[in-house]
Image (cartoon, rainbow, N blue to C red; front, side, top):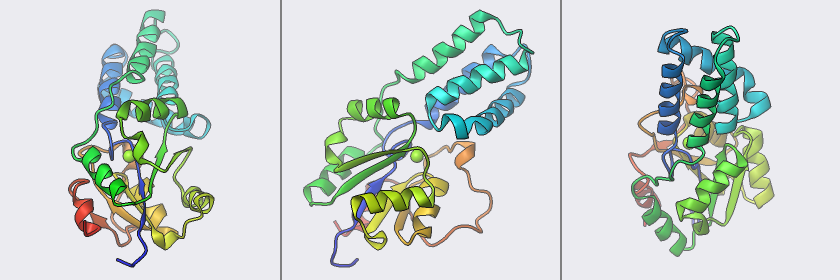
Length: 232
Ligand SMILES: [Mg+2]
């Protein structure tokens, strides 16, 4: 550790609070609704492909997911899906947008300690602007952050823009997150530091196939171990 304190960046979904589980529940319900048309496995695959095609125009988050579910239902049923089922799909999405915010174990305590020791904390997340703002407000941890960035993507260019905006040097920035693809690799590639805290389940889009692309970063079991890394 150098003398200068790291500025600490945190991912939000599945790093600070529960997220992917809600998507999996929604997808399960969606497959059940459409089970007359195909197997759950096939429906899931079609939904994922539709989401990937739409990512560029919808971005990440629940509203894009809702539209992709509707599109998938129309395709699978050859436009014959009932209005009742379409209404059910919209309800699945709206329920997701009203889910409680459940912090992961240790999060509040760790942020409290880091904040009291004078660390500058940055939240850097993808997703729908309104939904992420809602989750932050409900989370009770918003006040610990000096800056909140809701990003349309987490590429190297996006991180460079964030650092430049905050006037931070890359080697002074330490990002913590659950996604190797979004929170670790691009961060390391721009010369910053990253810590991986895996969540028990990962969205297919965020999965990395093979280990070839992986640089040098630490993996922790939980957020509390971050305090050890920082010698706190
Ligand atoms: Mg995440």
